[in-house]
Image (tube, rainbow, N blue to C red; front, top):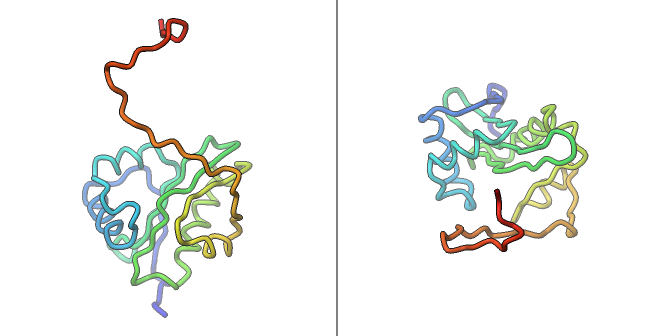
Amino acid sequence: MIDCSHVQFRYVENLTFEVLEQLQQLFRLAAFWAKDRCREDLATAIAHSHPVVTVWDCDRLIGFSRATSDGVYRATIWDVVIHPDYQGAGLGRKLVQTVLSHPHVSRTERVYLMTTHQQPFYERIGFETNSSTTMVLFNQPMTATVSLPQEATVQ
């Protein structure tokens, strides 16, 4: 097992260009769902997330996650990722627990997350399968030719 006693977890408000580059590399390596995200879109997503947690081995970004929340009723955890060389050392669990312990998330009634293959990992942390909230809308860009019904016209 790798020695992770020196690894640091940090809450951050925004990420520098260099850190965003490291995050892109981490996603390409360990996050199939996020491997093609561009730096500009990542910066926007992070700017609208709170908390954002990074995990560091010296100056190397080895983990990341973020959440969005209304601070009272609902929160959602996004983009949990640990570098493959550091997986299995408990860092993923600590990363999720760090997000969950942040006041903007810890006070909410429900915390959601989506996962494709890691259900057993999240169940060990306390998450439960919830088939009643599995709807999604795949937003399509609006075209200029869309017209609103008369009663829906914005003044």
